[in-house]
Image 1 (spheres, rainbow, N blue to C red):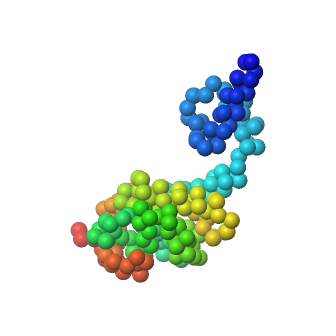
Image 2: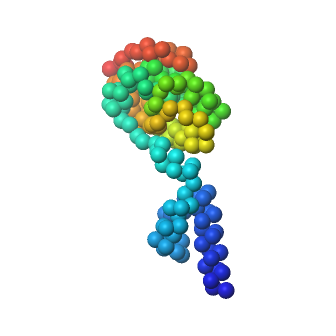
Image 3: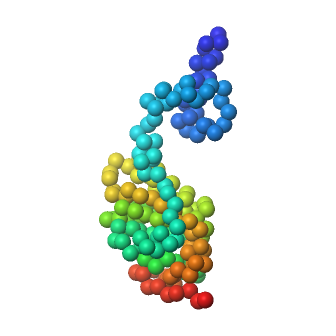
Length: 183
């Protein structure tokens, strides 16, 4: 009976692990026992997600990389983009409708291998949309060429507060008209 109870706990753990990450919580079995099994049970989706992990980039790093033709900046703020301004050359895909517009984003970012997401502070909406895109790409059978997904540290507010250039146009696909913030 004890053997079956242990087996049940083990199988329950494996099934739960597939849907939730419980590795930071207490579980009665040491993880080393399962490591040999776990490596074999990792799905292709997890492998792709690990390969396409989301990283953070500072404003100064982005400023130096932004001139490269293979980078697209994705602003996922909602209404505040229209009155706060935005990073010049950025694409606007509001977070509240982001999931539905991922195919449009992929089309707009054609030829880009790096996407940098941001919202006002890059604490919730920016990282969430970046994860949604990574999940979408992992599930997609097509290779769209996006290799790097990043999130701008401190978001647009940090970008603007650092005195970096912003644009005040109202275009969804900004053409890159910049103006320096007033000191």
